[in-house]
Length: 139
Image 1 (cartoon, rainbow, N blue to C red):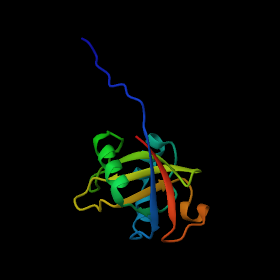
Image 2: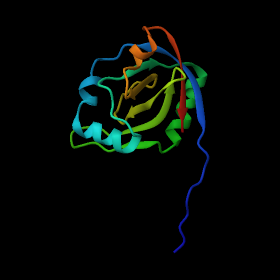
Image 3: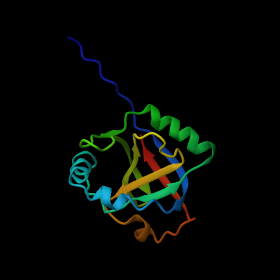
């Protein structure tokens, strides 16, 4: 039996987003045991409680979103009662690593870019709502 393997080079998407406050639900989600296990096993870090949110827009974001929708990403398998998610490794502000998380839930805003990291990104970068932040996404 022959095995076919997809071999492709990773591509990096360079984007800029605007820091914004989230709904405040990220901290409780990132504290769940199964979430911590999934991130540690699949992304190599334990998440800091909470997420760092960016508002994305424009043609560059629309094109990047289409690329990420086509790529398999890193699947986060949920426990019953929770939704699955797809993640990609990111570098925020040129120095902080983490993962952007796209929950597979109907109605999730297409302009929302939600980052989980091992550190409190907002505090580490000294970011306020409305600040422009560079992001590199590895697909």
